[in-house]
Length: 497
Image (cartoon, rainbow, N blue to C red; front, side, top):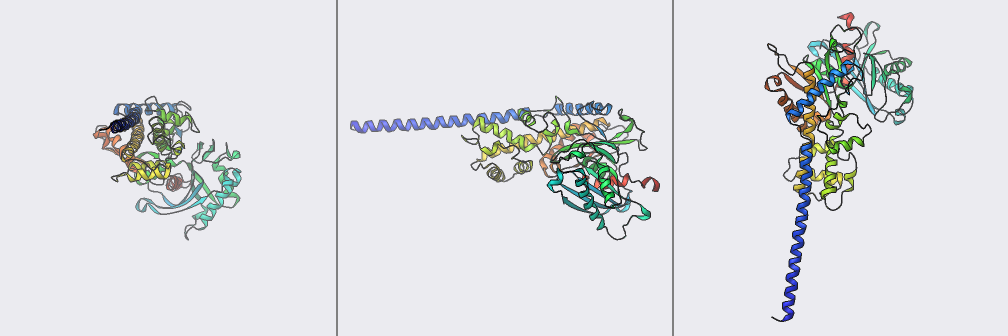
């Protein structure tokens, strides 16, 4: 072989070796980055850990905070608001009742025909009305006059034969899902607006008084007999169908819980004790916090950047508004520190709340062999089109970590309520059931979240006690529940009973 040929062979061999070395280095770099990504996931999973002991501590802390919130105003992060609801529906209620559900950019008016024990809810009709944007920041008069006129129009469509007899007024349950300082079953002053509303002259006013004024102005003879929030409505709706319902939990965009307390167990209650001996407490449990809650760096960052830093910590761990964004924050760290999506961090991944919880749920429930739903979501939402199956599996794992933590903490919260009212253990000779009414899109539509919550509650209670606790889906508390409370607090109810 000539010198030239030998030289060429040497150069070629050197080039091959160099190329091979590059491939090896690239693989090592890639495997090093993959290892870093997996380390981030593992650390996240550990920090989100909810072993049984920790959950029992969370339940105990919830019980302690409930006692503190009932003892004095401001005694706890849990407000434990007295709702003035002391008569929950019995199922005997009869007649035609109305409800108004105002909690966002739309409101609903409902008509519910009740037929007592035999017939239950005979019929219900509702109409949804959009609130023009200018009324959300205008005057109190303008907003309530708009609502009153929509109510009047709805009443005008009442079926024949339903005119209230003997000059009786029509009665309305008003679900008002904004912060209110309740002063009686049918009055409460607005503390502040949320959800895009900002009507300054309504703050500090009695919202029932404002609505009543507007109804009188247009000659609508209707009386608000109950001012409630959606959680208490859910409790009422559940109790109408099942007298064993003792608490209600909303797990949707936000979260809250309400339960039936003995009026003698409320030290801050200074009024006369109701005949029923019971009082519904609106816990506002989204604001619960405890050192036992498994809070990660992603939760801390989410809280710091939120509109209400330091508030609603429990809600930020378990509710639908936030779960998808916790997944996004973990993925962003993997993209920044481990090139999870390649050399460039996908710009859309930096957009807060771009991954919504319904998207997270769809990915978490993906059963296709190649996790096609995960791939499609990443392409459509984040504009990331080159995800491998290996990467998609990691995304599902992140969804699992976040959803399981949320569901297990929600179960621990329910355990706290059961502890407070002595229903977490079985008393000798007792076999009564305790039913918890649950509602909200997260509970209703996120199947893995729901099944995890239910199995965790069983795990925490033990077999014997778990057999006495039932979780029931109670639909549309903010609507039908308000009408049922209008019925159970009717001004004519005492006279007739």
